[in-house]
Image 1 (tube, one colour):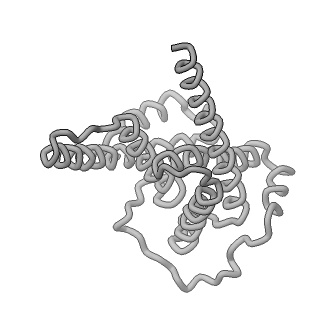
Image 2: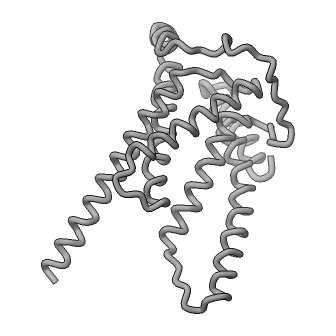
Image 3: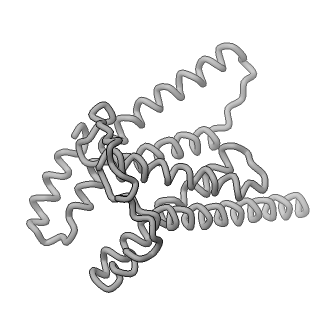
Length: 216
């Protein structure tokens, strides 16, 4: 770990086995640690692009809010890949694909294993359900804003599902996780909810601006 090693060691010391499912805390810290490294690289690249554009055009105006959303979205995608595919101390240059795996090993039948989880560990069930849904809220919220799409619900959902399928495919061939159709379904639900939140925020913003113009 580059940055969060001391924090992980400290948490391991104070938890002393008292934190259930501590492996999830460990996975989150490993993923965040690697993401911080790429965040720094992204900031340097983004700053370089802005500096170059301003040097070419002194009248170039910067929408700092949009730039912040772009940076946040890129960081979110990187973090999600490390949480789901390149787990723990895995790095992309260590990738070794096993293309000999049979597609019959995939969990194609929807909801069967999720229902089994419900009758077993309650934590595993809710973590699997809510985790897969909540992690894709940001995709549905930020994607249409960044690409300035109007009424782009189906395009946003399509790209969200493609990203989800890409994750499941990498998990399958890299053998770093369990590939399941349920994950794609729940991810899609997350994209839909995220898009609805984006739509509500957009409508609210227009309403507030309209009220200000009327009162002004």
